[in-house]
Length: 316
Length: 281
Image (cartoon, rainbow over all chains, first blue to last red; front, side, top):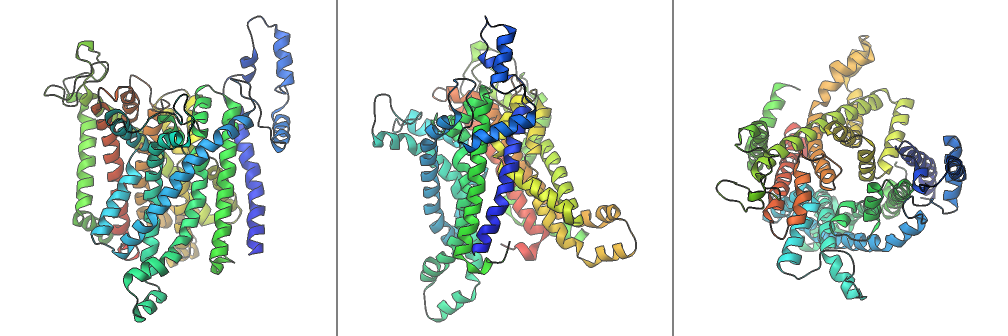
C-alpha cells in the first residue's frame, strides 16, 4: 500500500511539471502584448520598455518560465492584467462559492444515485430500470445550460419561487438567502453528475449480483432487498470513490457554463470574465489550479481505492 | 468485419424501438439541414414589424427578436451544428485512432511517450482551453472544428490502444508478421479492419459530444459567430427574451437534446450489436 502511494506520488510530480509548462506555453502563444494593459496615452517608448523590463517580459521564454515557476512556489500566480490584483487572491476569494456549489451538487447526486442505481441494477430490464435508464440517457444528453434556462423560466420568472441570479440578494446577508440562490444551479449541476453516477452504479450492481457471496446470502435465506441494500451496496460504493475523484476536476472549472448562466460568483465565472477580457495571468492561474485539483483528485481516488480494496495493491 | 456481424448490428437496431426512433430523428434533422433552402423565408432577413411573434400558422416556430422566421433559423442552425459536430468527430477520431494504433501496436518508448502526453492533456481542464483557443484563433467554422477536434481525441486513443494491444497478440497478426509483411501493411490490412466496430461506436459517441461542445461554446458566445446561427447561439440570444418568448429557448435546446440523445442511444445499440455476447445488457 505504501509502495502504491509512493509510486503514484512520484508519477504526479513530472505530470505537474509538464502541465505547468503546457499552461505557460498556452498563454505565451496568445496574441496581444500584456504590457499594453499598463500603457497610458502620455507614456514614452522608454517607459513602455521599462515596464516590459520590470515585468521580465524582455527575457527569453525559458527564463520567464523559471521566474514564473519560482513565484508559483511562493504562492504567487501573478497579477491580473485588468484590475492588477493578485491572481491567487482572486481565486481564493471565489473558491468558497464554487466549492460550496459543487460540493452540494456532488453530494446530492451521490445520495440520489446510490438508491437509484442499485434499484435499477437489481431490477434489470424491468420498469424501474427502464425508467432510470431513460432518465440517465436524458441526463447525459441534455445541454445543462438549456436545463438551467428552462428552470429559471419555470421557477424564477413564472412561479417567482426562487431567485435566478447571483448568490445573495442585495443588502441581505443570511445563509437562507444563499441557500435559496443556490438551489437552481445546484439542481442543474447535480442532474449532470447524477446521470453519470447512476450508470456506473447500475452496471456495477449488475456485476456484483453475479458474485458468489450473493448466492450464499440467498442460500441463507436473505431477501433480495437485504442483499442489494446491505451487501451489494458496500461493494458498489467502491467505484463511487473513483467517480468522486474524477469530479474533483469539475470542482474548480467544470461549472463555467452553469455559473455563467446563473451569474454565480465562483471560479467558473471568473474564468469566463478572464477569457472575455484576455486576462492571461488569471486564465493561467485558473487552468493550473484546476489541473492541480484534477491530478490530486485522481491520486486521492487511486489511494482510497487501494485502501478500500486490498486486492488491487499490485495493479496499476 | 464480416457480413454476419453487420447483419447482427442491423437486427439489433431494428429490434429496439429506441434505435428506430433515434435513426428517424437524426434522418429528419439531416434532411431538414440539407433542404433548409426550401423554406420561403431568408434566415437572416430582418423584419422588425414581425418581431417576437409566438408560433403560428405562417411562422411555425414564431419569430425572434429581429423578426426572423425561427423555424428557418433552426433549420440553418441545425446545418451548422451537425456540420461542426461531424467534422470535429472526424478530426478527433482520426487523431485518436492514429495515436491509439501506433501506441498499442508498437508499444515500447513510443507508447510510453504518447500515453504520458495524453495524460498531460487530460490533466488540463479542456473546456477552459477551448474557450481560450477560441479567443486566439480567428473566428470561423474551421477554427471551431479544430478546437473541438483537438481536445476530444483522448478517449478514442485510449480505447483504440487497449483494443490494439489485444489484436496485436491474435494469431492472424502473428501469421502476417511471420509471413514477412511490414508493420504498416499489417496495421492497414489486419489491425484497422478489426478495429472498425470500436471506431464506429466511438465515433457515434464523439458526434454527440462534439455537438454538445459546439453548442456550449456558441451559447457562451465563443463559437459560431453572427449572423450564422447554431442551436447553441440561438439559445444565447433566447436567454435575453426568456420572459416574453420562452419558445425561443425551447426549440433549439430541444433539438440539441434530441440529436445528442439519438447519437448516444445509437452508440450504445451499436456497441451491443457488434459484441452481442460481451455487452449484452
